Length: 288
Ligand code: 13P
Image (cartoon, rainbow, N blue to C red):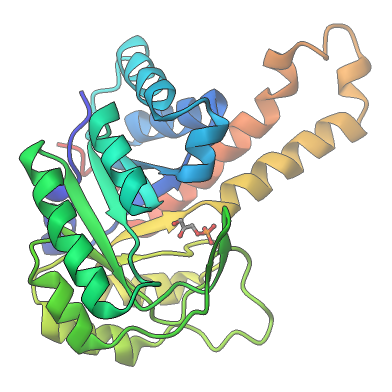
C-alpha cells in the first residue's frame, strides 16, 4: 500500500540520511525503481511531474499502474507516490486520483499568494492523509516545462511557509534541474544552514539531484536535507544503455527487437543508478 512521505522523511531527518525521489515516465521506470527499493530495503518516493502524468495517460492511469506493480511485485518497503512541481489544479487532481503525496510549487507566485494557496492545499491534502511539499525560492533550469530562475530562498519566507503545516519544504539553494553547467557555483550551504536554523525539525528537500557531487550531497544531508530528487540521471543512463544496445546491432540479432529485450539494458541502467543514489543518500536498510 502506498504511504504518505511524512513518516519516512521524519525518520530520515532524525537518522541523518535522505530518501530519494526518483521520477517515473513509464512502466519500465516504475518497475526498476520499485524493485531496487525492495532489494535494498529502502523507502522510496516515486515522483510524477504533470507532463509525465499526461504522457502516461493521466493520473488515474499512474495510480493504477503503481498500485498494480506494488501488488504484483510484492513491494514491501514504504513507497510514496508524489506529484512533482504541482500546479494548484494538478494538486487537487492527484488528491482525487489516489496519490499519497503532493508538491504544490507556488514559488512563481508572490509570497502572499504562495502562502494563501499552500494553506488551502495543506488542509485538502491532510484531510485525505496525503503529505505535502511546498517550495520557496526557485530551482533553476527547466523540468517538463516548469522553468525557474534559480534564486536562493529567503530563510524568513521559508519559516513563513514551514509554519503553514507543510510536511517538507523545497528551498532554492543554487540547485538546478538537469545537467549542471561547467561554471556552476555549487550549492549555497550558507543559505541551507540559515533555512534549517529557521525551520528546525522540518525535513528539507533538495531538487536537481542529478550531477551534484557526493561531498555536497553528504554536506546537504548534515544540514537537514532529508529528500533528494533525481530525474535526469535516470534518463541519461537509460538513453546511454539503449543507444549502446542498438549501436551494437543487438536489436537485429535473433529476437533482439522484442521490446522486453530492447528495453532491458535501459531498465538495468536505471536500477544501477537508483542503487548508487540510495547508497549515497544512506537510505539502504532503512525500510523497517
Ligand atoms: P534532476 O532532473 O536535475 O535530477 O532534478 C530532478 C528534480 O528535482 C525533480 O523535481
